[in-house]
Image 1 (spheres, rainbow, N blue to C red):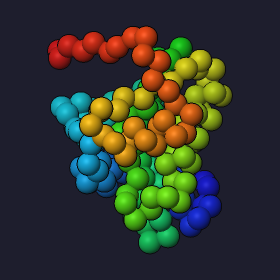
Image 2: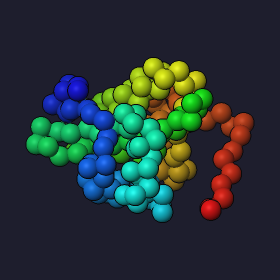
Image 3: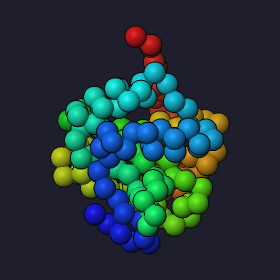
Image 4: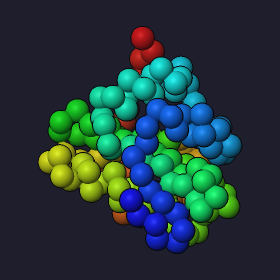
Length: 144
């Protein structure tokens, strides 16, 4: 557990779901889908134990969360969110570092993030923190 800046980081567990869902729902540009039900997130966490993370302030409030998972060779981060009250304090960077450290320890070679093009704050965060848009491929999707 890391308590720098009075913010504690710890692994995301399903008991965190309601607080995380409320945080995600409060973020402009972060969209939720049928893949974000409590049941679906529980399956994701079970398949990727210890990779996702939450940030808790000194009052016990969740001020950050991100889902992180991998398939053994590539990883993805989903729904990085930091409460407006905690922005500018390095919380988002620490959440990502937590995930990257675990992915590196698992010998995962690369990680992707999915950010909607209209999410200006999210895109600015990722681009300012060493992530890039390779502009060489696109994601195609099909609902099942």
